[in-house]
Length: 109
Image 1 (spheres, one colour):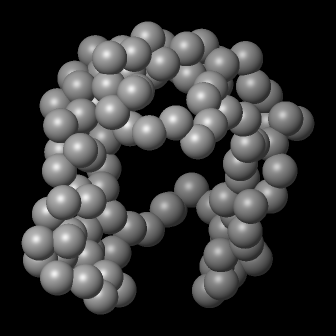
Image 2 (cartoon, one colour):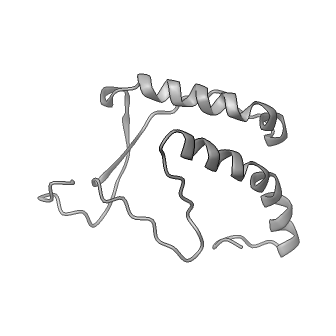
């Protein structure tokens, strides 16, 4: 159970089960396209060593759609998202956050 969840184990299992159904598809897509797939688990720390800023662009293929409606289209949605990402350049991105504790003199900041 993740850190910060205050429900019962049963509630967690009920919320997590639809996501577990698509895990294999996400992993297969990552492998097929030479990417790695990572997850942020309860006791692990995820560190980005490439810089002191996180950048993002908010664009949606679908919005406010129940997960069960996406399952059948997930392979195509992942391909569409990959194609969309390939069209973006750094000037398309916005600063999402600046990470604390990064030395501004660092070549990664």
